[in-house]
Length: 130
Image 1 (spheres, rainbow, N blue to C red):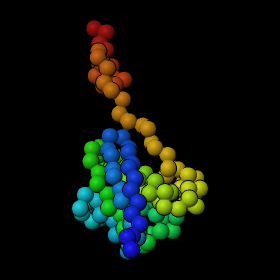
Image 2 (image 1 turned 90 degrees about the vertical axis):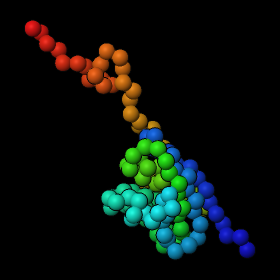
Image 3 (image 1 turned 135 degrees about the horizontal axis):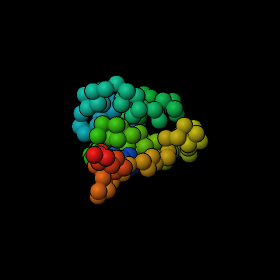
């Protein structure tokens, strides 16, 4: 019997995560490394686990994520969205708690581009009267 494998994509800032969810013991592998080894900060691991905690599936599924682009925070957010989408496609009853917690919403905030004649996106050069 083939085991059910769910697949979803999550995005945050400039990070893109491809997430696979399958029944297992609850281990989370990111880019072929254990999550604790990949994300050295504990808070990022908590962000990744939030959809599983919300739906009471902490030890029920194995997560395999391949993520690239962005920084640590963006990658953690992208994986969280991918896991939430996997859980939703797995069972429709998870949709309501995930939606209420905000885990199914794509966070569209990204870095604003730099404008010409300015130091950064909005910051002007220092004005000198004399």
